[in-house]
Image 1 (cartoon, rainbow, N blue to C red):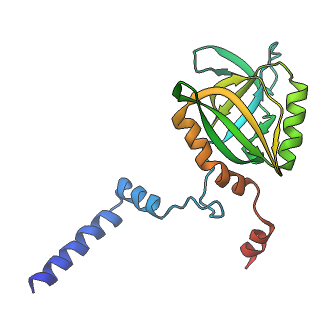
Image 2 (tube, helix red, strand yellow; image 1 turned 90 degrees about the vertical axis):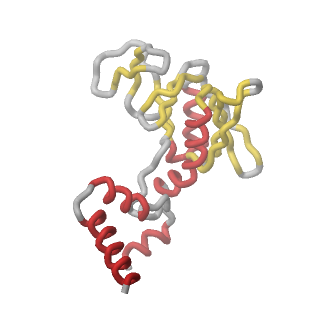
Length: 192
């Protein structure tokens, strides 16, 4: 009898918190069911990388935007990324020698990414570009050419970001790539 009362009280207690409209509990429940599966409709890309051209002589067009940098400066960028997470298959966070809290990124890019990166590195040779992650300025860098390891193509971005951000970019790179480039078989699975 006592066990039944405890069970009923527990059910009422849990039901009250879940269905009383408490936003905190509803959010916690939704997060517990949320998935990092890129094929899931709920997946939202995180740590999305974008490379942008710095506009040295702004003309106040709709394609230009003023942003604040990490060090407090303001720069103007072209809002259309010239490279993004859409072409990045995987990322390695590479700590700098002597300072493991500062990292550079090595990007494994797909075939279209290789073409885009070659155009980017040739067209902006010796010029500074801006790296943004989730629409926040991370740093400026000069692009390097690709290096091949077998069928893989790797590029290095020497930007010197904090290790937390670098690890986040590395962790979500594959999921973001799958989100932006779904397999053809996934299209048919959604129909049935």
